[in-house]
Amino acid sequence: MDKLVIEGGRRLEGTVKISGAKNACLPILAATLLSDERSVIKNVPALRDMSTMLKILKNLGVRVQQDGSTITVEPAGYKKYVAPYELVSTMRASVCVLGPLIGKQKKAEVSFPGGCIIGPRPIDLHMKGLKALGVDIKVERGYIVADAKNLKGSNVYLGGHFGSSVLATGNTMMAAVLAKGTTVIENAACEPEVVDLTNFLIKMGARIEGVATHRLVIEGVKKLHGAEHSVISDRIEAGTYILAAAITKGDITLEGVALEHIVALTDKLAEAGLEVKKAHDGIRARYARKLRPMDVTTLPYPGFPTDMQAQFMSLMAVTDGISVITEKIYPERFIHISELARMGADILLEGASAIVKGVKGLSGAPVMASDLRASAALVLAGLVAKGRTDVHRIYHLDRGYEDIEKKLLKLGAKVWREKEK
Ligand code: EPU
Image (cartoon, rainbow, N blue to C red; front, side):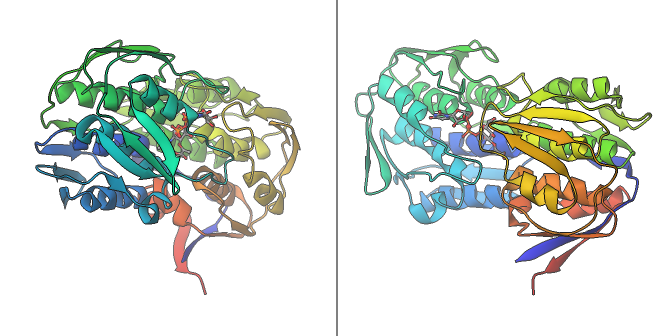
């Protein structure tokens, strides 16, 4: 296992290229299962989660070829419909093959995805959406077992206790595109990753209206063809580098990223005093004055993303004054607080809100990464801390941040990877 070592205290500056979006790419790769024809997916980031998804596709009998960031999927003639525990248990997002298998094979067996460190992650909305389409679906032997011979369009409201669901919307939509008749999904998630998936499905010949809204109208078709698609850039990776500029008092230009996808973050940071501007083919984030503390609440898109909450907390931990960070998507997603405290942060958890009292500085320490975004938060803290920070268990980071140490190194950080002893 590897760890990341950071000697903190350097100002980051320069240009960084943002990779393709992990959370758009995973369901898009799954969607290639809806056709018999070849699809070509570009701008695929080199991440552990992507390897897991490719293993799942291969395990289903699909041929997959990789050439740098381009992946060619040849599903012709695949007959299997099982996504086994050994693969699904390593990545919760594997559940997004459920919709495509139901649409194409009219049956599926997908290992039930477990909970994870960011709190309970139920799949009732996935089940609700698919049941509404006439799918007979139950949990047996730890698997979601679906029989979809009567797959037909229907109306379904996909709102839960915490609002809309990204992957439940994706799964329901991917089953509906090959269902008989019309499906209306109310309270559909409209995160940019869902929009990217919808655009890919349309390229495959799906008939979907209401793209990027909370109401998707899907007219089922008999067959989809293969398509070529370049995945959108990763707004969460982008946001993390913007925060790296803020926390190190730096000046970073991000290439290949859509400002409109991260307005909730950049608006907050601008209010805090960071200069964030559209630059040629991207965004420039520059520390120009002392930052002010900011309260944020995570919400479904276009609200402040839960996937930026931990990283934002690292910035507030060293911003003079008090900020309150409230989590409305995953109320238990606060494991990073105790690790930030090891570095000298002063943070109190009150229910689903963290009260952050900005301290003058952090000091480097050995810390343990608990999930992907918490790991990114610890890296940000390490960049500003005095001395050496060892971020253990960085396999989490490798799930979602392509070439993180190379990118940080290029921006002037002193960072390297070491094997754990
Ligand atoms: N929810 C339910 N029932 C369901 C599904 C979700 O109650 O059947 C709840 C969840 O517990 C949560 C809320 O709905 O409170 C939103 O969850 P959502 O279903 O949208 O999450 P997801 O689709 O499983 C994706 C991302 C997550 C990101 C969330 C929220 C992928 C592969 N994952 O998960 O990304 O946090 O949307 O935006 O797209 C990450 O990248 O680190 C990550 C965790």
